[in-house]
Image (cartoon, rainbow, N blue to C red; front, side, top):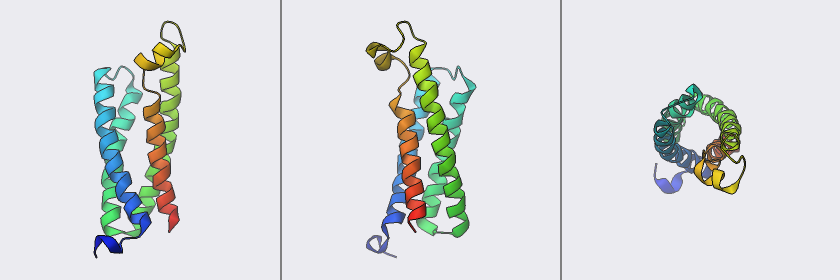
Length: 130
């Protein structure tokens, strides 16, 4: 099958796979830098490469059971991203000065877990597109 024969949902699943590869690298570096001082930091570090592998396998094989596993993982990614957003916002708030602009610059990156959620939602959209 040629690339031009791929439907849009398959391209989106491949994009989700590549996005989780990059997210995996970033989240691992960021949480490693903080010495994993909270054990919850291990969750996205472990999940993102698994999501990448499952999405990549689904993009190239299209197996039904992989689609079910992929959708389950994407729902888990949405939950993880939302929980991470809460934890990152809370992390900004406990810094000296609270929710001042400088703490958003220096504290935990609030955008990263939102991005994690957004890529998971894109995966859900691609999965339910069929």
